[in-house]
Length: 74
Image 1: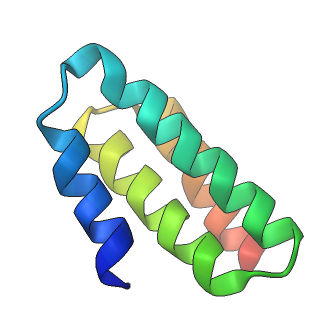
Image 2: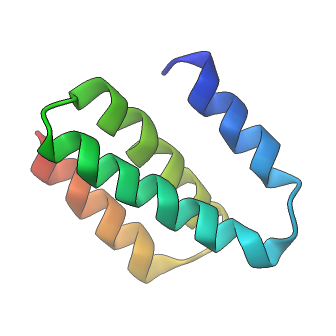
């Protein structure tokens, strides 16, 4: 994973809890768009961030959605 997305995780981890789900959803959406346009590396980076954030927030439904998207990417 490149430094830019990892920095995104750390930057947003200090944000108010109410914004973190929105940020995770944005990463999931970007991962889907990149996957569908054939940009696998960018898709993987954003899906990794989304799954990490969902796991940290114990958002099981959305974690499953992100993990499903990652499996479909393969």
